[in-house]
Image 1 (cartoon, rainbow, N blue to C red):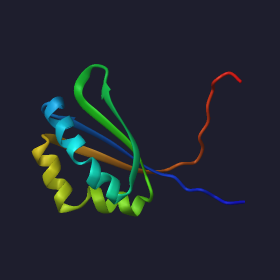
Image 2 (cartoon, rainbow, N blue to C red):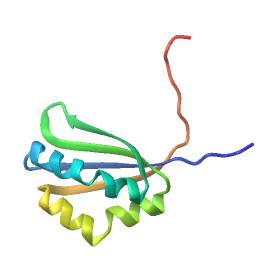
Image 3 (cartoon, rainbow, N blue to C red):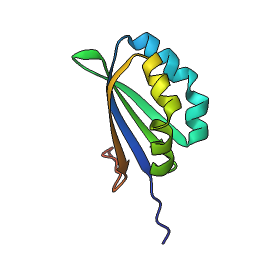
Image 4 (cartoon, helix red, strand yellow):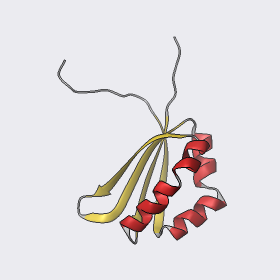
Length: 101
């Protein structure tokens, strides 16, 4: 049996201006992909559209940490108007679907 480990990152942060943040986020797609990001969701808090959640799947936690903790990313976050990011590095334990069969 082959065990497949999936690594995820959950980032919660406030942004000063969502459209400005989104532009920087989109422009960084190629460097995120090269660093190991495989897919992502961007969500906002129902009561605060500038409270952003970035949930992404990575090829490894080590690559995600190296990317998000790099000086280059610290500067990109500053330019994007990110305030107080909260990072959670996660390993998938289980995945399911509750769709009717």
